Amino acid sequence: AVVLEADPKRVLLSRGRGNSIEIAGDGLKFVAPALSARAPASRRLRRGAVVRIVENGKGGYAIGQLPEVQAAIVALDTQDGAVRALVGGFDFERNKFNRVTQAWRQPGSSFKPFIYSASLEKGFMTSTVINDAPVLIDPARTAGQLWDPKNYDGKFEGPMAMRTALAKSKNMVSIRLLDAIGPQYAQDYVSRFGFDPGRHPAFLTMALGAGSVTPWQMARAITVFANGGYRIEPYIVSRITDSNGRLLASAHPGQAGDESLRAIDPRNAFLMDSMLRDVVRMGTATRARALKRSDLAGKTGTTNDSIDAWFAGYHPKIAAVAWVGFDQPRKLGDRETGGGLALPIWMDYMATALKGVREQSASPPPGVVRLDSEYYYAETLPGQGIASLGVAEDGVAAGSDADMIRDQVF
Image (tube, rainbow, N blue to C red):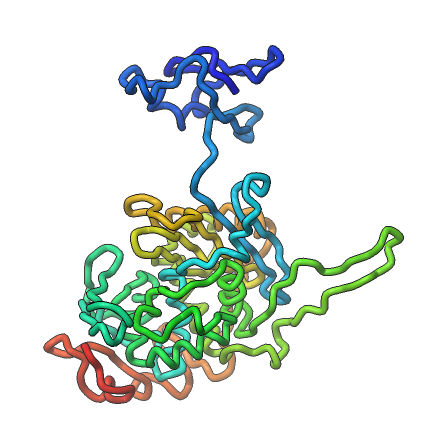
């Protein structure tokens, strides 16, 4: 539309053929700085300017613009992999690149749950105390230069339970965990979720999601925690018929519960689900509490310099992954995060998808024991599993707990 008149309170626009509309109030939020009398002449909205208008859902319009940034979301039925939603970008007519299936991006912290899952198979417990303290990594162990990683907020909180560390997305804890179980083991382990090991080099940087994934892969992977440990292949087309209704082809999807599709121990899936629910309850995804449900779980993800923003989450019946970023990777903005950019997209979808769906509680499978409000493998109860990592008077991992895995370098 073309601007006919503009002032801080209203803008009159022409849509051609004598059709004009007036926009005021909230519809001017995006261009408010350009309507100010103090706006530089080069940025001021004035007669003759061409602007983009969008419907506001209330019978009116708002002034906006075509975004440079892109976003994608994909949602799966956790029981059989049916694709319930797939949006590969802002506008298919402008760009046919499908970011759900074709965009290989760093997952950042949204990859941490798979490292934590691997650690549960190596004797770690959700209550294991791990030191959130600085580490310095030798170049030989990162395939690069000397690595001095930091937490996102630049702060270190010292010893904390593994459950708390995942909820707060503590980088130092993830690095210590990966070093303890071994990057090679972790690289092999994540293939259970459908990840390509070759895209996740066996270095400590894997702990922070330095490999590459597609949103499609992330959705398939996070579904494993939602359905009790089964890897289900997503599918889009359920059946094909001709013009007479004759069935030509139909999908035969795998089903959660088929033991031939088991990816991880059901106890592992339960403990991971428990920890990922805490990410929503008290961690980096607390914004999702606005949906007023106790059966939501997931993990935020933000890569270095805020280049990619993720949220991979689920309800027991629906898993969805949202991603935000530029096609040509660059910074999204200062302090932008997965919780601030991708999570709201996920929430908007889930608010509709879960309308009328009852909340579901999770019951521990056989072999899981509850003690003092915490869950454990029956064979790794307190005193049997690894009690701590990287915790000693001098701040260096020491003692029998560390020796149970291998010598530490911190």
